[in-house]
Amino acid sequence: MKTFKPIPILLLASTLVFAKSPKIATDLDALDPSSTVDVIVQFKHRPTEAHHQRMRNHGGLHKRSLDLVKGSLYSVPAGSLKELADDPDVAFISPDRPLYAAGSVTTPDYKLQAVNADIAQTYGWNGAGIGVAIIDSGISDKPDLHGSSGNKVVYAENRLTGGPASDGFGHGTHVAGIVAGSGGQSKGVYTGIAPNVNLINLLVLDPNTGSTVDSVVIAAINRAIQLKSQYNIRVINLSLGRPVFESYTIDPLCQAVEAAWKAGIVVVVAAGNEGRNNSANTSGYATITAPGNDPYVITVGAMKPEGTASRNDDLIASYSSKGPTLFDHIAKPDIVAPGNRIVSVLAGGSLAQTYKSNVTGGAYFILSGTSMATPMVSGAAALLLQQNPNLTPDQVKARLMKTASKTFPVSSIATDPGTGAIYTSYYDLFTVGAGYLDVWAALNNSDTLPAGTTANSPAVAYDATTGTVSLVTGSSLAWGTSLAWGTNVVWGTNVVWGTNVVWGTNVVWGTSSTQGFNVVWGTNVVWGTGQTGVESTSLAINGEN
Image 1 (cartoon, rainbow, N blue to C red):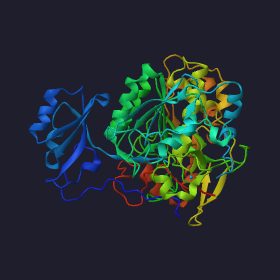
Image 2: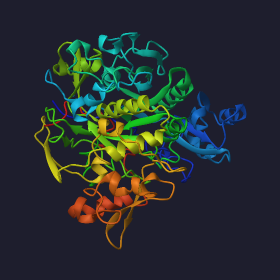
Image 3: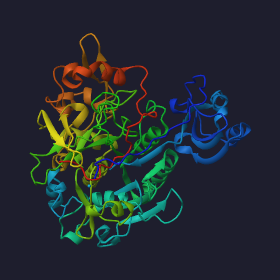
Image 4: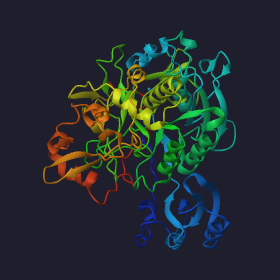
């Protein structure tokens, strides 16, 4: 059985090359002018009927309003894109891009012990009263997702088809179990990180393919914001992603997660499972997927618990995507958490039918990927917010990153159980971020952020004269304004050497540094725009040894 399931990305027929417009996404540059394409048009202001009419005048059809990003989804003739972009009210035009689930032992998976959540639960921290929105493939009604007051799913909505929100794929239920599973059917063995939270089920992924498109996810994020007060939604979990096509500043999916963050909701996103992807000759670096490339959100990579209760032998999963991000060079991931061979609630959907050997104990299912690591951090965020409801998303992110464990080996080797291929991982900032999630340490931290600062992930810059990469911090970033949040404290001396120097070229890029640096730091970054071999899922299914 192969570890990775190839997922096709958006491929466009190349029969017409438009004159370049900064308002048109690069993956719309080559289209058959007689074809139609679904595009998200972001305007400089919230669109009105007059804007919709102007789109219709060019043959467009208004399909969905996306007020969250001051935009709308239209079906338009490909030949009209340049004329649409010439409209002075149009800010940016991008395709309605596909996204995929980001994520495989009757032996304990030790996820609670790995992040010290078991200690937190003994002191009564269980997420009670906090709403966590699971934007995924749905959540099925299962015993482990019931509490003393009934079903933990307090709201459910199918944003994909409008039908029932039960999980026909099997991914969302697994994610929900990692956050909130009671462990009842395993006598407490497979308990979630925050078992008393309330779950808000927003279905966006197709039951057969685990895929969706930007506009559906944006609509779900908007719905979570609308329901925030009613259900005390303080966390959104996004165990999904797609390739990066442009700067986060104009990507509509990134703009949507930023809107949720600014509305007071912690947004936790999978880093992606592209860490073995060497198609651009970067050894898996610069493969963080969107919207995990946004500096606001908490982007999560995957660790391997190694089948023991001790955290000391845990290692990074070689498939976990690595930074920096394309175009903007943001230091990602922010943190890592257990994601390999994680046991959680079985929905009985199409994943379980395909991977029957991953079903364990009749009620549980084994999955691997950054999809599984992400809800670990979502659960941890819920515990912090239960402890202190006044924390802002930036404060939650800062505490999780500062208190993350910085103890790692220099490198480790992993073996693909299906192919026998061997992969070497290095424990640098772009691989493990600020470190390994430690829930109990975060709950015992009381540091505050200086007024007016944010916990946005910093950018990094390459200095060609010295051949080094450095963190770029400013007065508005928590990481550069005080001793309490200095870079060495947050990322540790084992990943940040010297005065903000991350590494030299020979440490990571080795003999292939020229092409690798051109891809990451060059001005014409094109990774993810139709290259073969690029995988867009955050499921690694069976994980690795």
